[in-house]
Amino acid sequence: MTKAEIQLVRALADKRGRTEHGLFVAEGEKLIGEIRSSSLRVRKIYALEGVFDGPETETVTPRDMERLSQLKTASNSLALVEIPHHDLSTVRASEELVLALDEVQNPGNLGTIVRLADWFGIRDVVCSEGTADCFNPKVVQATMGAILRVRVHYTDLPHLLREASGRGIPIYGTFLEGDDLYETPLTQAGIVVMGNEGRGVRPETAREVTRKLLIPPYPADRRTTESLNVAMATGIVCAEFRRRANMK
Image 1 (cartoon, rainbow, N blue to C red):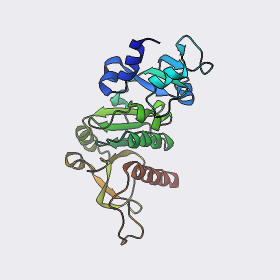
Image 2: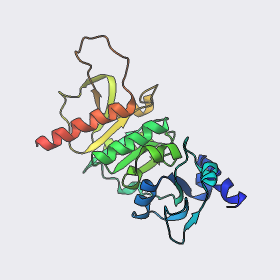
Image 3: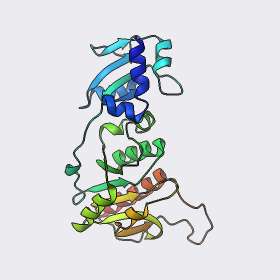
């Protein structure tokens, strides 16, 4: 293994490096196996002896894997994968449920939300430009392979919501002053906006929300924690949307 190869892998820990090279890092035999079976193109695999074979695979030592790995505990394999590019114009919020993330910063939260989207059959997640990069190594690992099936887009989110609302698409969002999630009519299609971990939905994004929702505490008058983790809240909201859809 050359010094240049090590430098390339390390550069991909940073968004600038991923953008420059058009590559992201995936680690672990299970995840890389899924990627190899998907439509994504694997440029290179570094693996311990006997883990993978093929022309793109280079066998390395455990010491080399420790030098390459971006995880706390080095895995048995690491792949360099070409970053896919998804067409935002193919998002169909008038026909299906779409998630929108407004400045979600924590890679673990973003990865979990992508995984939730996959679980609940949501194929598109639209992010504000300030949301964490979905190809950050921590995000990729947290998705547990869901990044291969969920299309993540980045755009001017308030502008996209404004256009969608103008076409009559319902824009949902979670707010402390919203209506009870379990008592509010919900549609099978539309956009659900989830906000930043500390600040919630930005004012410029909130202005485009047409239906504000609240996940109520139990019991309603009980003094409780100030808010829910954004990934946890996303799971609750998605579950309720899908429950309603199954009732129809």
